[in-house]
Image (cartoon, rainbow, N blue to C red; front, side, top):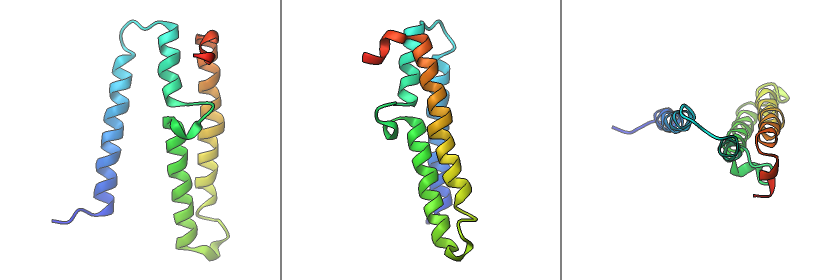
Length: 112
């Protein structure tokens, strides 16, 4: 039986959810501020945003926006604009707030 694109996406999303659950499980025990900051830095890399999990999610939404624009190019961004905005919110808002949190937890860790 041939797997559809949606089947492959669902499988990949399931793997991503499991990976995030594993990270969450790591946070349930005792964790020092510096260690928590390092874990959070893995989610958002200020210097190389595309390397972090949040950057990857934003990139996925950008690609989806481009696909939406190809589906109905005559709709003047009606389908793709919300996806572009969601990508920007992840990068700018979620990423920036994560950065602030890591700085508060470990101000010296930025050079690490």
